[in-house]
Length: 515
Image (cartoon, rainbow, N blue to C red; front, side, top):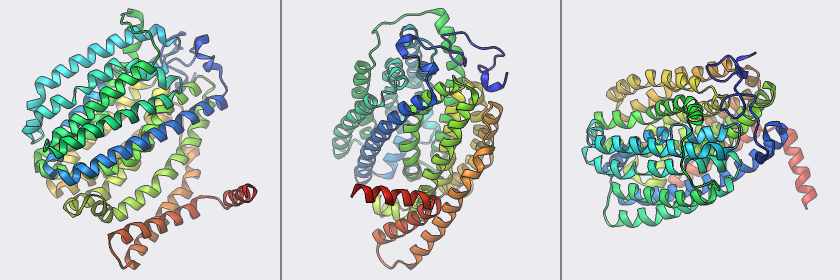
């Protein structure tokens, strides 16, 4: 039996109703999804992905709008204070439900049997984690070089309790591919965020405007998810269920916690070394680099774990085939964005946020490397999770963190916020990507067959970068022209390079028929 057929850390198949086994059988209520053909799962996942993309587009546009407004109203130091609170919240959000959401999505059996125990564990653990951060907020803020951030940390981390309460209901919606309901709840929460954050900013609340808006949005979204989840409203504790959940969830939560350290250690280090103002510039650049992972990556994650989990229940080749189709599509979507962002960063930042945020542009150029690697490692993480190989995700993220933290420290001391961004990119390419490829290979999902399909997108990205650079030098005009004309030229070059001629012909035929 190959490693891909085994639960993580075991040498035998798991029984029905467990997590991580590849022989699990869903209940009749689940519609026999374990035996569903790949095509049926793909159609459900496709519908869920479309709704996830719509929802993420709406929330990212909302976040982008709020960020634009607040960037004009607040000082970089306010962004720095918020970055410290955001780093704390990101860590606790990754570990607060101790893997219950992912466990619910992958649960082999009736979710109703797991939900009371899962909800009890998530609420209890979230409450304990919040208490730790409530009392530890002053020390954490001081470590990050922004002591004034302590009360903001205490306010923003309230959202983990809400997340713990709704964990099983979120899992139920994702498991059933009901991303349309999650999208509606999230977008309504984003509207609540806007209604609270912008008036607070106008009133001079500083970093509290960010935190207050996010807490308000989380409360609204949590109420809606609770109602839409359609699970019995009861708590309970079944030792057998708890053991299965914790066996799956503890390694996953540990891995996610390390992943959060990877994504937020730079905030603490930059703040500690350079202060809140420099951290504010860095935060804005990091947020811009997170647009695509936040929009596409989050949407993909909503459907990738349930999709890969269902495929993993079939023969191993079904999952391998799904991965071979997914990776080239993901690479083709992210490379042109990264290339354009790297070249046009100075014009993008000044056009959107104003000249005072110019230092962020030189950071953004190097963070585009991290953006691409994060998309690929996140997909690897989801594949490993769907196989129950949560221990492999711990090794992946731990190895990345061990290399990253000293690199960030030296990079920040040598070249400020730009040095931190360069360190991020180098470690992502040299350490994280090989670790992800190796983990997938050991899990029985080799990526070597995918390489030929990546040649055309890679060539397209190089040509896109070159064409954009040439267009920037030839353009004689303001920031708007330097941003949009070269961007269109570079994107056109990428599309003409990557999309086969036959697809253009088919598109022309369809348009002719439509007329």
